[in-house]
Image 1 (cartoon, helix red, strand yellow):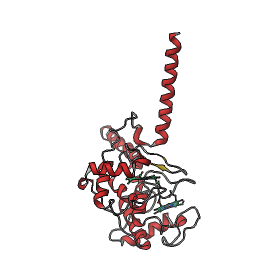
Image 2 (cartoon, helix red, strand yellow):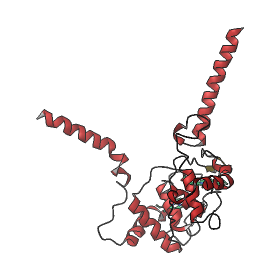
Image 3 (cartoon, protein in one colour):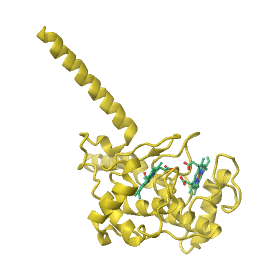
Image 4 (tube, protein in one colour):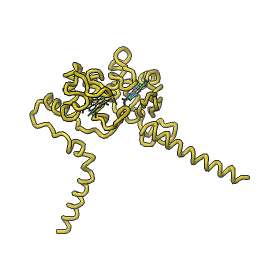
Length: 254
Ligand code: HEC
Ligand code: HEC
């Protein structure tokens, strides 16, 4: 009896511990799509539940608050897909640009909402990005010209004014690169067409794929790629520690 109870209890405990990290993302929030349900109707339903209170009942119409953009203007399905996959939306903060967080929806729900909003605002195009089709050297050149000023050549990110932070791109997925280049969120410019055609985007994504958390960090440890704020803080802390040590050593010599 005990032999089976102990592992059972262990499994139960594990399930409880792991729950929020796995299935918990979608529960107790919106319910899942019923088999065979029209994805557009499902996207509409999720939109009304989770987005309409701020962005308005009609995505192509006005939003409900002056500080909330109408989804007509932000970049169609690509913007919604990026904002939901990166956990920026639904908005949790009360001020400032949204930041990365745990996604509130699973991928099929995200696609449903993205395509529903895309349909309503007349842009359902989500780019296909394939870094294996890109040229890393060309990507590096394009990135140096177009992206490094804000995100840094090593992708560590930086504060870029008016409360905007160009986030760390270390470990960023290729699709997000294609989506944000198309939509230009915050004060990031739009990079679309011309040299930023599909081949250009694939090449930039091939370069950003090399910005792994564990390489190309001349400043030292990547500190979880959390971006400039904690990194600056840690740099400050370590710097201060080194200064104190140095002062002690110098002081000790006298
Ligand atoms: C509590 C209010 C609120 C809710 C709920 C909300 N949003 Fe937003 N949304 C905002 C605000 C404020 C901004 C502008 C801030 C920003 O861009 O970071 C925004 C911006 C956006 C953007 C533009 C992102 C960018 O940076 O260009 C998209 C896309 C978006 N929301 C989609 C959604 C979707 C889809 C939902 C529902 C799943 C949703 N939002 C729910 C308040 C909200
Ligand atoms: C003027 C500064 C600026 C330039 C230049 C710029 N970005 Fe950005 N980028 C930003 C800001 C600010 C954000 C955050 C926007 C937000 O959260 O609403 C951002 C967000 C991103 C994200 C989303 C990261 C995430 O956490 O989801 C990616 C990917 C990205 N940029 C890639 C690029 C690439 C590739 C280029 C060059 C083609 C580039 N950026 C050029 C300022 C910039």
